[in-house]
Image 1 (tube, rainbow, N blue to C red):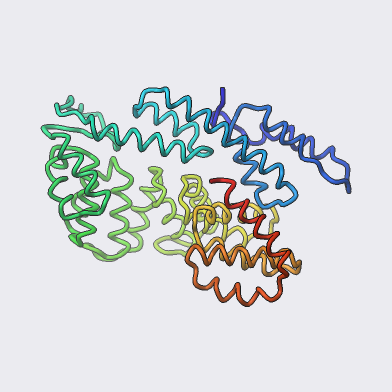
Image 2 (cartoon, rainbow, N blue to C red):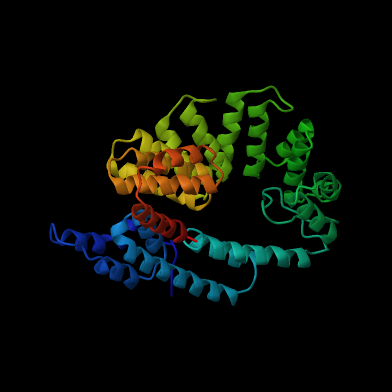
Length: 387
């Protein structure tokens, strides 16, 4: 039986690895077979992911990283095969997400998409029981009263593909009949159509139950759309949404603390909220957290953590992270670091950073072809290990 993160404590799972490293003789070529064996001997998947994130840039561990990555993919596949035999229900998805979103996100996403497709075909046409006065509606489940499944399907699909004018008609009836997703869709639709007062009206109807609605209200106040622009109010709404676990709001709360907009500047709070958003797989937060740690911390461990967050963002296609990795490495004296910097600039260029073109051209004459080829192999392996 494999486990994700339930009950997982990093210090416990890596205790034997640390003991093994401490017993390695100084000055000798380090063999990492012991720590890999220790990883493989425990049943959890998350320690493998932690190991990859911690050592992804360590070229001395390239063979170990390949082995751990291969084992991690195999374990994720085992779990995917197991869930393929389970009922395609929200309960199964909740369990899958709770245990394996960190280490096997693509497999969890596939399961979620399959469930969504099934729900489109099987939405109930009969009313469900009314809510009691002390009950709150669930955010991600339809609350249907005299609403047919075709209306809901059209509402959800048209909003997803940004066909907002037709979505507006499709969502109105189910929203008026209490469907929570249709209500937040109405807020999104009106905002997209620049009908801001209506967007605010719909969002406020469900802000107690929907972090996304609170976030949307924050956006309106931040931009002065349909309301008087108010940074303090925007921050308050963002923070309320962030406390509800909404990743985009966690990112905006962190940004506000970092810059000092709507709240007094507080870098520690910024890092805290960036960490929460990054753990929620918000890619801009991974970049911002990494940038803060590498640029403002003098602690080598924090700098290493920052680089790892930047690498994760670059793996997801975030060009600014690849660009920053290049700038950091270019500052070093070693030729191999210059070569790696050039490769990161190439990656940033491929991801759409125009600034990287000039930086790469300026550096190219300082790097020999063999060093460049070696750096390309190392960094491309880093970028592929999480795929």
